[in-house]
Each structure stands twice: as C-alpha cells, then as structure tokens.
Amino acid sequence: REVVPEEELQQANGLLAIARYAAFPLGGAIGGSIVVLVGTGAALLVDAGTYATSAVLLSRIRVQSIARAGAGFLQELREGWSAFVEQTWVWVLVLYVSLYFLLTYAPFFVLGPYVAKHSMDGARSWTPVIIGEGIGALLGGLAGLRWRPRQPMVTTGLLLMVTAAQNLILAFHPTTLLLTITATGAGFAFALGSVVWDTTLQRRVAPEKLARVASYGWMGSMVFLPAGYALAGPIAMAIGLKTYLLIAAAWIVVSTLFVIRLRAVREVGLDDGTDAVPAPAQ
Image (tube, rainbow, N blue to C red; front, side, top):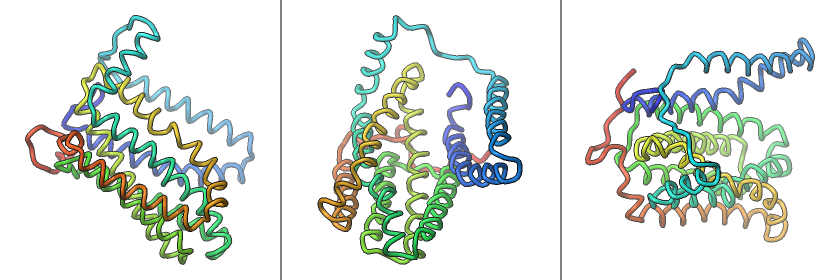
C-alpha cells in the first residue's frame, strides 16, 4: 500500500504475477542464447547487470515508509508472530498451503519427469508440460488483473484444488497432450489463486503489520517444500508411484473441502459487505 493506491492493489499483484511467470521461460531462452553466442563469462556479466539495473529502477521509487524502528530483533519476531496468529484465517491457510506443497505440489514435479521418460514420449515430453504450466500461469496473472471474487479465500482454496487434476492424470501415465492441457489449467489456477491471496492479505492486514505477517506466511508456506522434494522418490518406491500420486490428488481435494467450510475462512472478503466486482480498469 506504500507503492500503489489500495484500489489498484489487485492490478499491481496481477502485473507482478505476469512479470514473474514470464521471466522463467524468457530468462531461460535469453540466458541460453547469450551463453551460446558470447560465452558463459559474458552471460554472467549480463546477469550482474540486470541486478544493477533493478537497483537503479528501485531507487527511483519514492514512498513514505510506515516502518518504524523496533525494540530489537527478538522483540520484532515476537510481535510479528502475534500479528500472524491474531487472524485465524491467515495461519490456517498458511498451514494448508504448506501441506499442499509437501503432499501435492512436490510429488508432481519430482515424479513427473520420471513418468514422462519411462511411460510417455520420453524425457522430451516433459518440456511441453512445463511450457503449458507457464502459459497457464501467465493467463492466471492476466485474469487476476480484473477478477475480484466475493469470497477470496474460498476461491483460493478451490483454485488450488483444481491442481489435483494434474496429479490424478499423471498417475495413469497419460499422453503428453493430455498432461500438458491439465498442467496449463493447474498453472492458471495456481497463479490466479496467488494473486487473490496476496491482494486479500494486503487489504485485510494492518499496514504496519503486513511485512511481518507476509514474511511468516511465506516462510510457513515453503517450510515443507524441500522435504517434499526429498521424500517424493523414496515414498513412491515404498508405496508405488501411482498410489502416491492418487494420495497427493486426494489430499488437496479433502483438505480444501475441510478448510473452505471453516467460518473464519468463508467470512474473509476483499471489501467488507461488498459483492464481487471487477477491479477498476487502469
């Protein structure tokens, strides 16, 4: 809220999502081209230059910060934790997302390349799946520019639940085309849900607490992801790849249906007492 007016938060988050998801394929393509054309050393210099350019651009942003000096690092941590847990919907959804990354997200991206290599069209068939995921994410960012749901946290949960389809399809060793279509839908749902979550958090949490709440939220969401990557292979070997992917799909469906029925989640709205309306055009 220090950079853009409150009524433009969702458009700003949508634009950030578009830039973020566009950077992955474009960055990989541009970086690879630079390495091929002028060499690794020059590519690293260009990479360093992008950081310098970012620093210059950020320095041109003029904001009046609401941050104030605190009473010390440990005190700031305690105050941040208190702010994080004071609204039930925040910590409940962060816990829900952290388990999603552990049990549903990680298995798909660890086991997917294995299935593609051995049961689809070879290792190369994973490339269109990832491209589809990225295209879907870009479309989700575009949709986030305008769509403002009436119950944003219920919507976020339902969007995450859509991603169960790619685990379910992958479990049955599908064609490349079918899995690519499913991954595109999953990318769309994940990106749009992220825009809705970010905007809701920025609107519902007091500005002086937002940075700390968002930090705890990010840390809490990602805390189990490395374990998910590490454990996906051993678990698949122990219980079977198909069984594991089916459990992964079932988990996000069951947990979502439970979470969205919680009163604290259902009552969260972008604007108190208002219906869903399109965000103002830029």
